[in-house]
View (tube, rainbow, N blue to C red):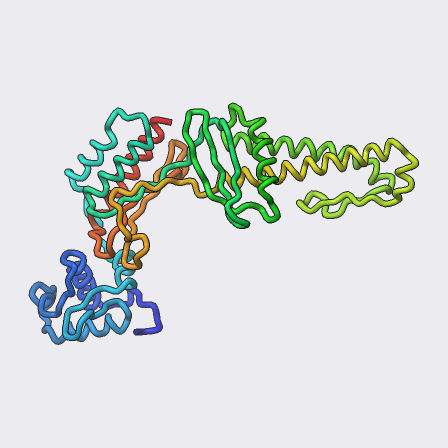
Length: 354
């Protein structure tokens, strides 16, 4: 195989046509394509020997492979990638496929999760592949939140929403956090959670942090100005107020009281920063649900392909994805428009029901 990555633009017309016909023939039949098959309807009149030579060149480039001695050729993973990127001709959406998708999305079921499950089954039916539908994370008022330590590097957040929906998300906890610190964070959040979504809770915590920081700045200003203390790494996560001239502080009861208050505020600020980090991790955690129309082991096989398209809400923000997983011998030209159309319809459905 050549060390240089091949390029469609570098091929001459004959090589490009041989390559395209081999790939299309393989995608259609699943069988190796031989030189004699290609000579029958090739654009120009060439011999089987000439086509075999072109096939050998394409094999040398790593685009084709011969599974058996004296057999035809099949595309390699690299060849399929090049074909999809540079030569794939996407067809129009078949009317029957469109009707199937429209029928699935046109019901009166107000449960979006249920509709998406049905979409997954419909996609599997029309494409004969495994469907994949990634749903948007739930965004409703939080009723209860729990953090569960699974190991030093993995934790689970359990979100119970006011509408009865329950969602689990896995995340990597901040370094140094313990099960007890996670319980403390959950207890604080549950005390203020009522009526707030997860993102709104984050805003509440941010305001708390800003208020504590402002209070610390106000109390520390005189100490710093009078030379009793100085900031180290001010404004950063590792900031510290270093006290000097401790004897002078003890002689002045007011300064000592301010210092005690600052220490309390710092402890509170640190806790709230930890809680804010928990919230960020919980919001970004792996919370998507996967609906698979036909269970199989293709996810663990290298010889599988995924055709996926994102779908968006009314604000043009990507909130999920829909796709089809199947063997590399997918009918890409037919499946790409199916997936794209389904993603567009799901986006509209989610926007209309928000």
